[in-house]
Image (tube, rainbow, N blue to C red):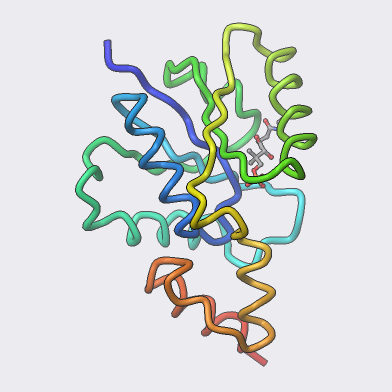
Length: 164
Ligand code: PNS
């Protein structure tokens, strides 16, 4: 049986930090399913379908693309993971500031389904300061994010966030 992990998130939009995390997860699991949350707490800049498409495009030429699936996540994450079936959720950790939120989510997911474990992977040092939120903030203020997100994503951010 191949080992399968689910890597969930808002991915609004995907960054090079997410791709770094994915590559690290692929060292540990045979397959990784990127699950793009349809309903996210904060108002996303991109629709779920747009976030999904940007991930597909960003990974189209990736050497490990055959071991990655991109999917939309509706409803509870643990139900989705069980439906695969998979038993591991993968999340990235950058700094201590991520910990409280991640800890709360991991324990809630464990309460909802004790069979499913959350594995935390440290983001590469190059990407430790990057988040989708800060990337959007920089683009909104006219800053350059090339090299921090896939090229197609940088273009879409410019188009979207410079709209009147
Ligand atoms: O990238 P994000 O916004 O930190 O990802 C959060 C996400 C999508 C992983 C989380 O909100 C989630 O799992 N949503 C699906 C609904 C769910 O199961 N919520 C309870 C999680 S404790």
